[in-house]
Image (cartoon, rainbow, N blue to C red):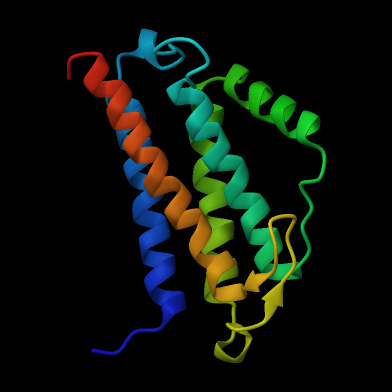
Length: 152
């Protein structure tokens, strides 16, 4: 069976989003905003990042333009999302993941090698499409580490 990179990444991205939400919901409610120590991030902060980055990633895929230029505003947006509660966070993760998947599926094969400029250097659109999946998979490991620290 032959598949496209777009189909593979769309499916993998959805699975990664579903998986990080499952780990978050597995954590005790009173520990979702708990930090394992020092400057370690909370589970809610990690999932909020993924929810927001899925929207930014979709916009980058669609426009080939980096729009997240104000880090202070981004940190505030993330903090506001965490403060809005689990239901809002879950809803935004689902909405932005859907938007991201639509962007990935909308990329034509002849666009996969188009160079996209970012503050971290230029890269092919296929790599930009891969990043949200990788990011959520990476953060799933962090969430599982928090879960293990809690004895689960």
